[in-house]
Length: 448
Image (cartoon, rainbow, N blue to C red; front, side, top):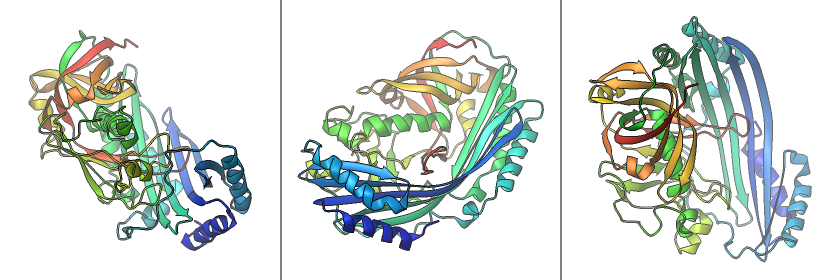
């Protein structure tokens, strides 16, 4: 890894070379190892070291941006960004880059040496564990371990540095007529329960063989945590996004303080909570903080970056995504749950559908947060509190706002972590419960 001293010297070089009114330098440098298996054998092990340097130069609100993965080329990239800014139209929504204002929390543990030192052999042994557990079923999946250095620096004196680690593993087990899947992730690779992951995916695959066809319509559902995390992802991007809120493209636009979800729904974002995927600052270098978004069904807040906050004469909440087009996004969501299990949710269901996860999910109507997609890797019929039969994958069309107004029970929340496999390995995720929801709308069946 480069280390804070070398990366600080690199950003100093860039800022010193710039003649723009204001300049920001962002750096992501990483080392990653990826082991993949398919058809029940390990077929790939790759390692990568890379760095991504982005420079933004602004004069008279004209913004130029350029990037490189060659640190020796930093001055040329600064000049390129300045050249682009000279021919760019002014951005009247640009309010500059933030200055150093608050102390960045340095006590949270984001870099775990055990993950950084996790060897290809250890990844292979764990992949082999999954393959053995699958027995005569076919196993597919991947296991990524990585370390990332993140730097944000600007000409206002701001400098933020962090190093972090991540481990992300998934396993899909496939039989002749059905499949099961499990995923886990954490900053500490030694805290992932690999046996539980393998056993869960294999158990689902065995139960999923020879699915039946059922009539489409509205059913009570038990959504497992992977499916619930996907619902929260759409809430993040399309609901809690401060840019969409200001432009009237969020269902929460003009509705802060209103009850829009069930009274039993409480959601917050906290990048400092070590039970999630902690990270101390956003992609403008603003410190993270806990922010309640929904409390007892009432929408309390959306998230802001520096630009959207300035439009309302307020402080950034520390949620810059690094993209002015995407706007601010909460990446560390938590949902209040209970102290029960998924099995308890199933046993309390007279008739319904158990959903492991969603697939090919897309937004239909952002203003009602209506999405469509398919179930995948384990969809089961629940009758009289028991799983009785596997079900062919179902297409659904459902408003998330409506669904989260019909939640009848929760399990204990667990972490569902995500991260980039083919780019910079930035770990984020949601800590969510499984949900029992009334009247989920299934509209079609996949017979393949």
